[in-house]
Length: 207
Ligand code: SF4
Figure (cartoon, rainbow, N blue to C red):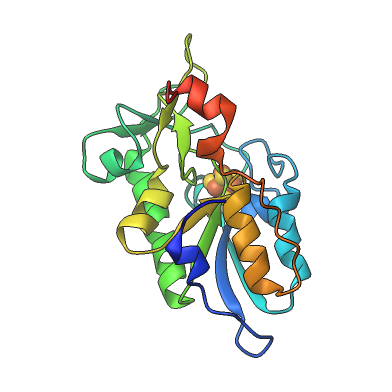
């Protein structure tokens, strides 16, 4: 299992005082993906709808700034933190620089997180906006697309402002979350987070 005090230390919520979780809107099935889909179906996130002691707040920063459908943005020259620091930019598949727009979307997401006093964010990994562990390294439509370890712009904005983030692929972390929401949850002790997978360790040469 994963050792993340910010998860094990989450309070036990009640129906009257639910845990406030911010989700990438597509993870709950909203059709806000670049192509007007929900980017697939992720049962690990959809499961959160089953609890009566959680308040789910959803937001899609890319839909907020660009609408849907839209071109696909990715971080180039660094990750979301680098974008916020002015050292990298966000480009679309046709090369449009939408750095300023993406930062605006990240600030809106931060505003929503603050207004709702969010206690945890569950975000779609690999997105140039919402990714929390892995994102594309430059446009995914380039000749040689690849990945980098890092956060998307909106995840980075939340992270540097104190919000904790896990992705829909962080199964060990999600197990801890489920057990907070349901004391009878049977913990899957062999669940692993994305950065513990064979793919991640092999791709980023962690072995
Ligand atoms: S920006 Fe985030 S919420 Fe919107 S479609 Fe992409 S991953 Fe989902």
